[in-house]
Image (cartoon, rainbow, N blue to C red):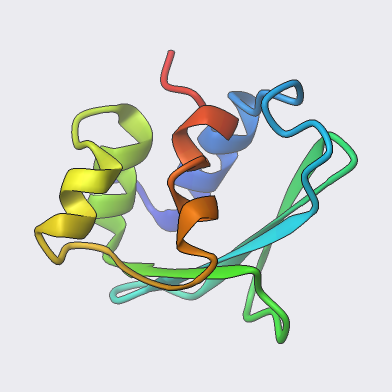
Length: 105
């Protein structure tokens, strides 16, 4: 199992600025077994920081295994959500775009 920071490092290497064009959003990740992180997408750039953002667009709660599986393509994000492995709060439609913004290789 990777640690959360490694997962976010890998995510950002796959960032698709075209898919994120015109998008300004903050994805908050509440990890059951790690520190929280948030990813800010703005003007075709993406950065992540450890901690909690007080104005997240969407908050996704899961454990690091689930995050790693979704971001590696092993697990479909929508299926994980339906199975209760991911809990979402806020702009749920935005959450569905996560794998378009950070595509699996």
